Image (cartoon, rainbow, N blue to C red; front, side, top):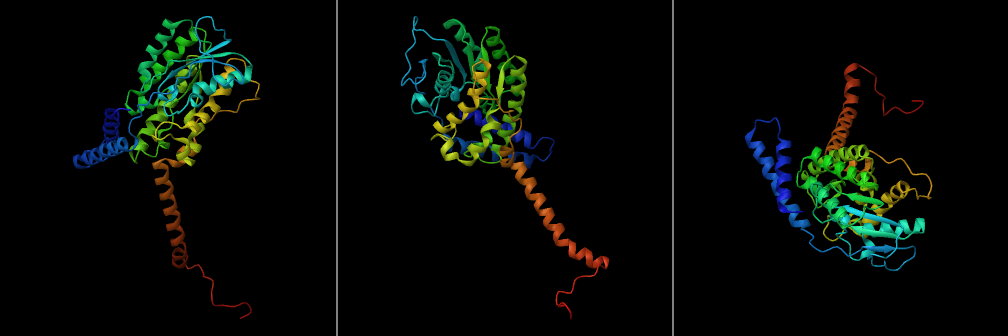
Length: 336
C-alpha cells in the first residue's frame, strides 16, 4: 500500500473526526495526530514488494505438484482468481500456501476432478482494476467455470469512494456471471485486526471497511454472486493470534491466515458449483462480535458504563442514609 494512501486515509479521518466543529486548533491537532499515526503505520508495516509464488496449473486429488497448463492439457473445471495482493498470495513463501492453490486442491479433493487454476489478481489492486483483470480474462481465452474475487482493503486505504468501489465490484461480478461463471467474493477484510495500525486511525479505517463490506455484499448478491464476509468470519482468530495469522510484514495473512480464509470460501465455492458433499452450510454472520469487541468506540462505551455502575454502587449507601432507611448494625451479634 503506497504512502500516499495512508496520507489520504489520515486526511479523510481527520476531516471526519472534526466534522461540524468550528474549533480550528482542535481540527489541526486531530489532523496532525492522524497524519503522524499514518506515518508510524507505514514505518512499522512497510510495503511488501515480494513477488507471490507462481501457482497456476492443473490440480488433481493427491497431486504433489500441479501440471503446467498449455493448450491440450485436459481439465474438468477452470477456477480463476481476481483481486488484490491477498488473492495473488503476497505473504506466502511457497505455492501451496496461496489461497487459489488451497481452493483448487480443495475442489480437486472434494470432486475428484482436474481443476485448472488461473490467477489474474495483482498486488495493490483496488476495485478500479477489476475491469482490466476481467478484460484480460476474455483476451486470454474462454471464461472460467468459477471465479473467486478478493478485493476491498486497498480501496479503504486509498480512500476510494465506498459506494463506487462496491458498484465496480458488482459490475465485475455481473460480467463474470453473464459469461456463465459462478462467482464467490470474499468481501473487505477487517482492518481493525491489523494492530500495527495505531489507534484511532485503526478505528477510522475499520469503520470504512465495514461499510464497504456491507455495500459489497449487496452489490454481489444483486449481480448473482455469492458474498463471503471474511471480516466477520476471521476476526476472532486474527485478534487472538496476530503473530500466527499475519506474515512478517504484519499486514498480509500468513500461511495460517490464508488457510483460514480458504476454509471459509471453499464450501461456498463448491456449493455454487454443485459439488459440495460436506453437509449443510452454516448461516454466515453479518456482524462480527469479536471485531466489535475490539473497536475503540466499543471499549470507550464499555469503560463508561462500568464507571457509571461503579458510581451508582458507591452512591447507594448515601442515598439510603438520606432517605432515612435503617442500616444494619454491623457490630450487633445474634442474640445480643
